[in-house]
Image 1 (cartoon, rainbow, N blue to C red):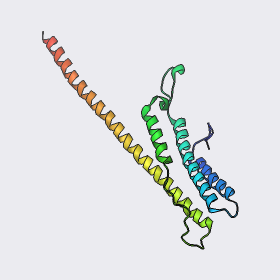
Image 2 (image 1 turned 120 degrees about the horizontal axis):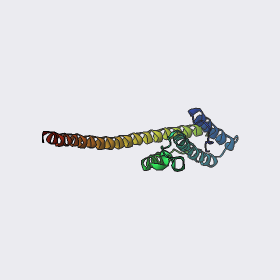
Image 3 (image 1 turned 60 degrees about the vertical axis):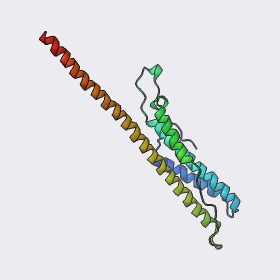
Image 4 (image 1 turned 90 degrees about the vertical axis):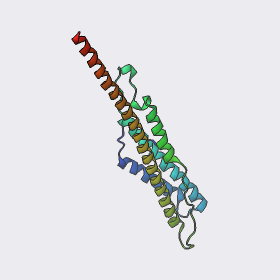
Length: 179
């Protein structure tokens, strides 16, 4: 379920798509679904939800990253030119789409309806998706800190070189002035 280009990628649009996934699930099930049919539909819905989330994130990145300043014939987005950004996007997708260890429609109470068990499974699926998003966010923060620390280290080194160079230039010109 791809987001149409030019459509705002706000949380309401993602929420709407997620609701549609649940509606589609319920429509497939009809009035009295069989457990195997429901299991397959739940698995499909979980895959669809994780794909929708990944597409939402990627489309949001695509729409919100600046274009690098170059002549029009050579313009490319930051996304296309940055291996680090590509790695981040792939890492987020991998973490969100990793297989979940969802519980099956276990019969804990024989009087419980298949719909009550399906609700329990949906809750497990959504909690798993939340955890996968938290894991992706934690990983991204760690990547950002590492990346920024590396840049800070290089800038500090350059400042050290510039400080030494300024001192050397000052001494050189000081010697020339005395001559």
